Length: 53
Image (cartoon, rainbow, N blue to C red; front, side, top):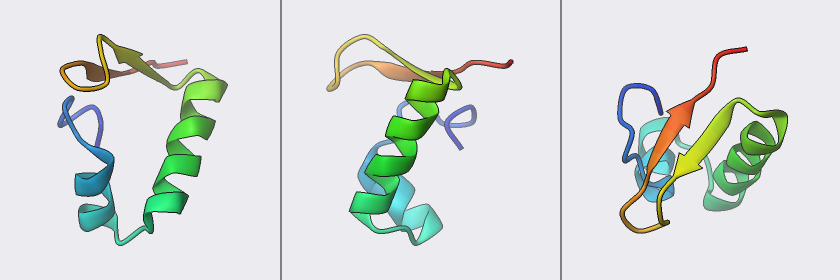
């Protein structure tokens, strides 16, 4: 989803997937730590980059 919509918010992600906010937050943190997801720019105006491994 992040590769399709770079400005995807956590709220919108929850709406699309049915995940709770806490679960979405945890999953995003895991993807960032594992190196699959990277945030470029500020939290308000930045965007996501999906890193292929």
